[in-house]
Length: 205
Image 1 (tube, rainbow, N blue to C red):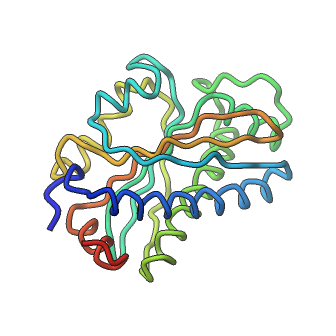
Image 2 (cartoon, rainbow, N blue to C red):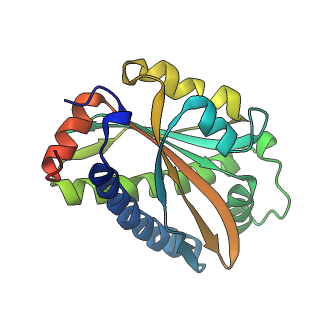
């Protein structure tokens, strides 16, 4: 059984990469349909990083990010957190609310609901890809959304799943909406037992 994410072999990382590729495609299709815009996903890269490295990758502890946190359960358990830069919220709120200038820290309830729903769709796309590849049943809890500095946001996975150690699976991702490039990264934190089950299901020792 895996003791931490650093135990993952290159083959295991490749398997997770493939899930990311399929999930990206699913997310792009779903977002395109909802936004009625052209959406293309970048090829994601999977990294095993400690919390400080994730903060550095995202621009430092004071960088303000929109985070959508989703817990999942079923055959495997864990959490994933989408880290979205301002441009994503701007496009979503403009599309659905007709607003051109949005302060992500001061979004009203309707604006926040629209952004959260788009994040929920993206999370569902990734988890559906994982479930399909591994022939699992996976259910999502309702998402929660927070707009805060990266240093504060990283306390969620650290507190929620402290048993996995000080490393997380960081999916370096992004997409373009009508040719506007947007950074969108994912922290994936399956429980250790779930990670072991997933790898065995995918035929990875």
